[in-house]
Structure formats: C-alpha cells, structure tokens
Length: 123
Length: 113
Image 1: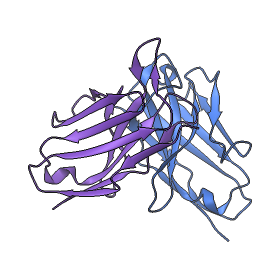
Image 2 (image 1 turned 45 degrees about the vertical axis):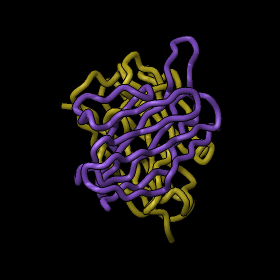
Image 3 (image 1 turned 90 degrees about the horizontal axis):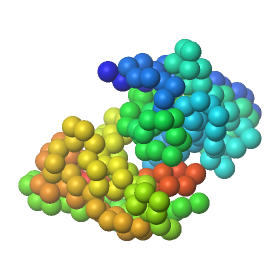
Image 4 (image 1 turned 90 degrees about the vertical axis):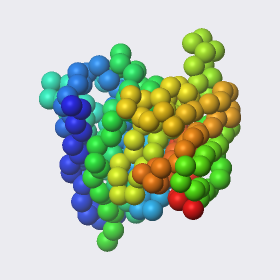
C-alpha cells in the first residue's frame, strides 16, 4: 500500500525558514517523480515543485523559485522541501504527491497524495 | 504558463442525474508524438486530500466508478458524472501536466440539488 507522510509544518515568522519532509513507502521510490502541491486555506490547488526519480531534474513554480529547494534521498525514501524567505502568501497545506508514470519522469499526473502539512507564515 | 479555466464554478444536480464539468486550457495539451492529452481530473471531498479520477483526459484511474468519464482533446475537456451519487459531493479540478509549471483549474463545486 502506497503511503506518503508529510511532516515539518508549523508556524513561522515572515522571512523565516522551514523544511518539509515526506516519508514514502509501498512503492519503488526512485522510479517515480515526486511533486509538492499546496492549497491555501479555502483556495484551490497550486503546484509548487517537482523532482525526477533520479534527482537529475528539478522545476519550480515562479512564485517559489529561488526561495524553495526540492530534494530527495532515494536511499531513505524521503522527499524534502526546504523553504526559505517565507512570506504570508506561502501559508497553505503542503501535499507531497507521487507521479503516476514510472520511469522517473517529471511530466505526469499524481496518483497518490499525502495528508498534507500546514505551514502558517505569520508574525 | 498554460492557464486552465473551468465552468461552471459550481453546480447542483439531483441524485441520479448527470453532472457535466468543462475545462479549457489556454493552449493545446495534446502531445503529437504519442497522441496523448496531458490532462487529469481530481476529486477533493470536504476535508480530504485530492484523489485522481482521470488521466490522459479519458483514462479512468483504477477503482474509480465507471459513472465518471472524461472526454475531449487539445484545449477542451469534459468530466461527466453520469448518475450523481451523494458521495460525489466534492470540488473537481482539472490539471495539465503538458508543460511546467503544471497548472490546475480553479475547481468546480458539485452539490446535491
């Protein structure tokens, strides 16, 4: 059974940093691209970042480029998102999502989502 | 960036009746080399995480009831719920994965009339 468990969310002041983690199990982690998708309270879904299975490719939404860094440790089946220079508009539930297509491609839809971790940026 | 729009914003349908949601992309998401539309539909029930319903615009994800169907190609797509059930109350999102940044539609809320 595929499981994705996010952690690391919390309350942080504007300009602060936070590191999110996603522990994956139930599938061959290195064979799938992984994404972070966020949802601000009461709002829709916003894709944040994606990393290929081999970590060879990473991409970001313009809204987080230069501030967030996605990474993965295939030996530990863990996905991470380092978030720096946080802003109020980064407040959201952050989901890690597994790419459906194997081969490690970034260009895929998302067949499994974690339960999400809430990040609140406020003074 | 590819902009995704959905219509209507919300709809209320009687139990057992058909619900139709439209999604339009600002540019084609049909990849000519494999003739696949890079378009997915997700369902998000209140208080729950999104769930993949349809990928490649018309392929139903395993375990998804066959009352859900997707159609369309290029820039215009439709999600149809053929006979609405109470458990289908949710917000439905389309998403393109043809280009990065991946983009979602704003969502369509489906309720029972």
